[in-house]
Structures are given as C-alpha cells and as structure tokens.
Image (cartoon, rainbow, N blue to C red):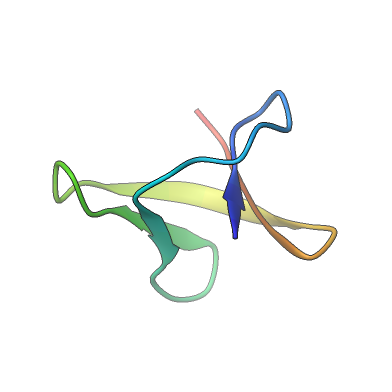
Length: 43
C-alpha cells in the first residue's frame, strides 16, 4: 500500500523498488519512505 504525506491511501500507486513507487496512471516514479505497513510518498 502507498500513502501520501498526509496518510491517505493513494490509488493506482505500487511499490517499484527500494524507496520508489510507480504511479500507474501517469507512469512516473516518486521517492518514498517506509511507513507502517506500506510506503509514504515524499514530494
């Protein structure tokens, strides 16, 4: 599961490696940090 910086679940995002997530809607990769049971996007 991937969350935004406010803790809300992001639909269409999936983990893509160490500290990276993929937005399947746009094809862009974002930096992320481990958070609880998932990843949190860092912008």
